[in-house]
Length: 470
Image 1 (cartoon, rainbow, N blue to C red):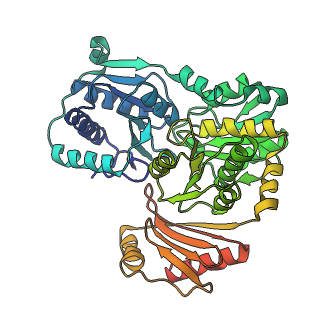
Image 2: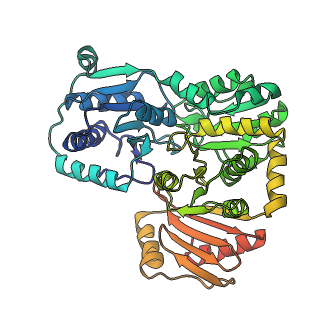
Image 3: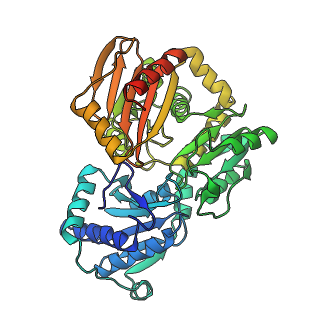
């Protein structure tokens, strides 16, 4: 079965991620495009550095061409945001990236994009799944890749320069040039190094890169920028006296940051810093959008500037949709993905990194100083995050408990209300909250708690963990 989650379709290579399934999904999408009259503008395919990504991109292109649709395929490995940018720039109705983003190396997958370079929403992915069910078992019409190139139905393109220029035109490169900042990059064996290095060198930064070679096993690590996977970047930043360190996940739509003290900046902090910078130092006006597992410190910042913070379910398609609706300044998630008004309507770790460098240059302050400025103004909130691997049986059991029977433990804090919009989120009267929700990309139950005191965050998370027997 091919089922889309919050970040596209992902499956274990050789199990769910097979040539037959890639072709089936692509054929379903092609048929849907033709039936809806969306095939005339063509189709874009890009791919990352994972095992079988380039091969899968060609499998998909052969299906698209076999359906008589013009297919533009990027001529080299590319960050997901670059692929989204290409869909938008070329005015296409659909495109795809062959990637499993930050999943372990045994996974690969497909992300589908719609007009404007946005992540496909549930309506689109549900329709693709319906076409998959109807087409399953039928032979697939294919056009050989080289034949497709020869007859013009498949075209290899390069949109790298246009993407880079769009970011350079959106940031204050002159301010960055005056600071001559030293930046350490960790692409985590993924696809961001060329883009980020080009942008930062153009702005006259001193750039050092680690973990840049092509390794489909990602050095034996999870290609996700978190506190555990970025320890080597911490050492590099401290040893080489860098102004900051930046890491991106496997397809470069998420970001991780190490500040000038060598401290890991949680994505909650990055999102808060950038919103604060854009409204206070750049004078932008507008709300902010976060998902239901992201810090409420954003609510405090927004309120202080007379703005609103909108909460949406997990999945960047929800963030981008609310941003369009509300004309928000910035939107993001605690997993490290964010985007800014005026850029593509999807996560972009490369643009986020460039904006962070601009922030340091324009304010003349270090990352640690800027975040302390926020804490001095709004106070500190403490977060406790836990992940628990699930078997299908255990997931069913907890689904019954939390979402059917809607049972909760006896918390020590009074509850204000409970939301089941996406997971089970309990809002407490002291302003704190805790959420339990199943991941849409991995077999995990994620628990996140935020409180004004660290001990309260730990105790509340432990109460829920004990109740759920995790």
